[in-house]
Image (cartoon, rainbow, N blue to C red; front, top):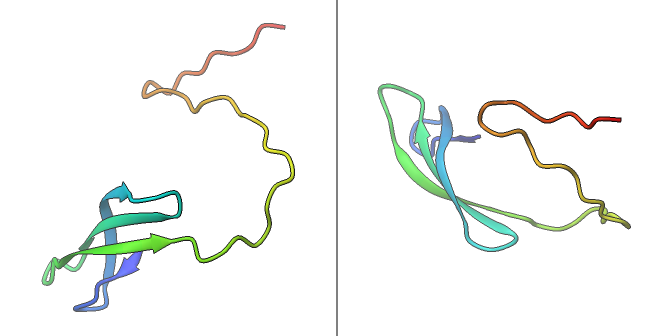
Length: 73
């Protein structure tokens, strides 16, 4: 979440676009009903603090129905 550059109120992300592996462009809208400013912002990775040694794959998130299949043992 960002603050509105015009009035300082909270602004929520409405959509975003992945520009690169380290940068995302976000389209934001001010939540102050008297302002309603819409603006773009960039979110960029400034640096990596700690890298994982081994990256293990994980199962995908559940679908839109929220159901996940359980493994049978």
